[in-house]
Length: 137
Image (cartoon, rainbow, N blue to C red; front, side, top):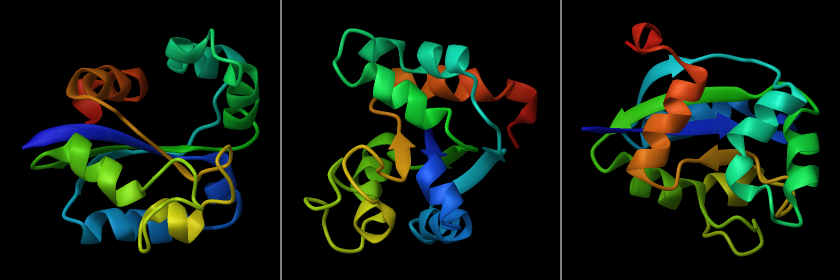
């Protein structure tokens, strides 16, 4: 078993898709280890997305991720990182495969409903960003 992190983003939370997305993840064999609703500060969002700091979309991303509540979720299953990336679909919902979370719930490339870790190393760091190990069950 391996772990990964998903974050239901402010757009999906605002549209009331949180429960549907969690159910979708569970139907794909993910086990929820930790879950919370929170609102990121600009400092927290900036730190979380620091890898993108030099990219032209960084400021817009931080602004979006602080625009409303988010739901970080620590998940577990075999091959968690790559499986979750497949389940959520392409960053651009217009290019996402049918039945993926982004095809079903994302509005645009920038407002794309969900974040997923892109490597096992990043998954471990991202889970630790939101959850103490004692909070994971």
